[in-house]
Amino acid sequence: MRPEVVDVMNDYLINNWGNPSSVHSVGRRAKKGLDEARELVASLLGSPPENIIFTSGGTEADNLAVKGAAYAQKNKGNHIITTSIEHHAVLDACKQLENEGFEVTYLPVSNDGIISVEDLLEAITSDTILISVMHVNNEVGTIQPIEEIGKIAREKGITFHTDAVQSVGKIPVNVEELQVDLLSASAHKIYGPKGVGCLYVRKGTKITPLIQGGGQERKRRPGTENMPGLVGFGKAAKLALEELKAEMERLTKLREKLIEGILSSIDEVSLNGHRTLRIPGAVNISIKYIEGESILLGLDAKGIYASSGSACTSGTLDPSHVLLAMGVPYEIAHGSVRMTLGRDNTEEDVEYVLEVLPQIVKRLRSMSPLSREKSERAYSSKEHYQHV
Image (cartoon, rainbow, N blue to C red):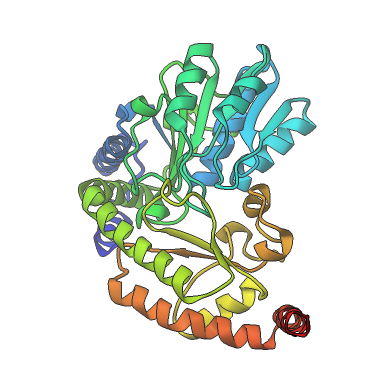
């Protein structure tokens, strides 16, 4: 978290500790902080404050959007459209709905990780009640044509949700321009606290609450508010909006330096996701003939922290469902590494990665049976060519 975020959170942990639902002065001070946090988050999204529902994070926001919208409209239809590369918060919510009798269409993506708007149009039926397409993929950083999809959904009267957890605070996000009815966001992606998020709900959009209780968050998400977390979210949103343009330009330059450096210094490596339609700090590569986990351990030993996919599924040995959906072969998907640049990263950091990573790859390939097999095949082919 940013120090400024920690400072405002500490104030609400120690001094302004009241419950915003209480009518006494301590509670009223907390309520003022809650209202200010809602206004700051709304400003980052281009939304009226009253359309922001606070949640425990992006996962809850996704579930409230997908299941809440489906339950609220089940008398109108039972068909949902999403994509094969969504975060598991959306995919697993859809699987649960399938078990309850809803029908779900999972749209494929191109090798760049982008869905076809034509495929979307073909998938729409008279029973379609919800479309859920993520704004930016959390693993490869590819940006989807949300504005175009939003226009289609609006014209056909279909509720449209986008998981914008990876885009909010990194690229411009305006709910009116995107024409979305529901949008999920998370505080920790913009250097706020973990366990705090929100769901934008366009006025008139019907969602059924997933939990019951008090009247908080306009009865859509009851429960005593996490005041330190919410004011931290508000502060992080304010800072992200103020620095958005400059940070986008800076991180794009670092990203390009990192991508070009990797591609030019390591052979048998490929970039995953669209070359340019990606958020500024996202780099996802596949390195042939070695395991991604071994690369991550090698990087970690050098003080470089990366991942092999979504942090939410990093404990599994299965390759990324996103890369497999993009057509990356199973064995190559296993050799993938995801690196994310952020506000504290510098050009020196990128140069350090470009110095260390090729050495790690060279060492691991020297021990890899797959790499040796490839070298032996190449040597045999060379001998055969010379003989002929």
